[in-house]
Length: 188
Length: 259
Picture 1: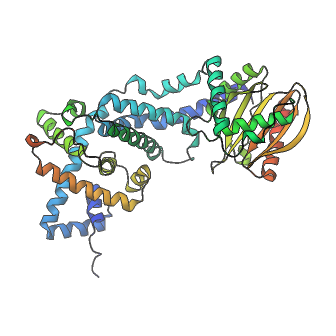
Picture 2: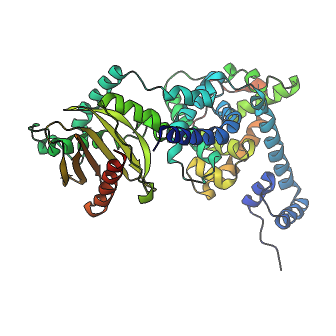
Picture 3: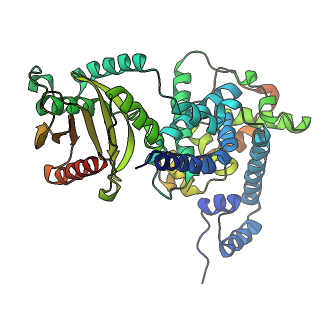
């Protein structure tokens, strides 16, 4: 076991991790942003997720899809953090969420529609919001979404139906003028 | 033959584009005949497009420096400063001696010799501390094997061979320097596909520089300890002795052939 040989073995493992994980970082940031709604909090979450990825990479089953694997880590970290946040009395008010942090490049009218959407999305329970984001925005298969959420596919499907129905209701029923109190963020 | 009834799952699959072309056609026909459901499905499609649009700008943002994976890996390669780390590890060890299940202080006699008994006890203490750790079971991961080898050699005062048990189905997870009653020791951890973890502990043996292999047990833990050329070794795990023994033999064989 020569030093040079050992060193190159470690580098190969790291090289593979970088090759598989680096392209996923923008999508990890997007999912984190959608859940945390604030850029700094979201990027902190992704940083934690990458730290864990580095330390747990050796536990990954050979050939396991890295996307579902790393989204599971990110999702679990986000849920822990959101639960902790909602236990505290200070909530991020809906009006505090900067629409520019979601749609900085978008056209102005789109920006307004996105703001409504993000506001409505925030009123979904976590279990509905997460499944909707994973399936529609991250384009995970139902099976991968089930893995990330740690639930059976049937549960993914029923939550997805409820999420779509509820979001449609929120979007059609609530014009921007009558937005609910910022402190009434729905959590299940 | 009538087509299968259309389900909510089919409607979601229609929105998400997961249906087979045949099923998709059947759902389309159904929606043509049921305009109020078709309106609902159209709204779901708009939702999907708007959600994608709303979060799309994040994908184009430059990735912040803190999220540069290569840089994060490079920074983790630097072992922490030994004194601070050793103090922290000693504190963790003392705390978990009290907390660990499976073995207890009542079973322990005060250290009387620097022999295999003490080594076995120290291996059990390290096992109880680090094996249940889900976050950081090892300080230096297997991918930085050369860093691990250099660090343990420096702290123990001589190189400690890092054996390879992949042929037996165990991967090296990594390792760390741990405190013992007899100075710093090198800990290497292995696991298999079922998550079974094994610990090998190695440290200098001044009193008994060479000893044949002997079994030891602490509750559900089994171990095999031996000494060669002034270094003592123990392999320990929650594994039956008849399965652990050949692994310990293999470790000793590899370490001897390296020396």
